[in-house]
Length: 113
Image (cartoon, rainbow, N blue to C red; front, side, top):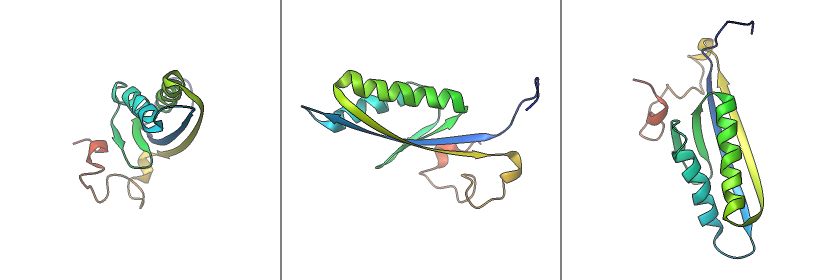
């Protein structure tokens, strides 16, 4: 990309934190990570295995770093973080994997009306 140009790419980032605590409930540490996402101001969806967010890649990665930090601050002695990134260009609007096809209540949060 050249200086001064902007991209209209859409970035979806899904991540999963797997904290390990010596004492306490791992799910409470995950809840601390989810609280970071909720306060970040980006469209998101919490699922059973991962949380998906939509936004600018660097910002989303920063949210993931803060979510991992929240697990550590909660008392995790280690955290495994799995990340998936899906970037689409404007030309990809007709591909099988875009969130605009087959809108359901689950992915409606990512659709701009």
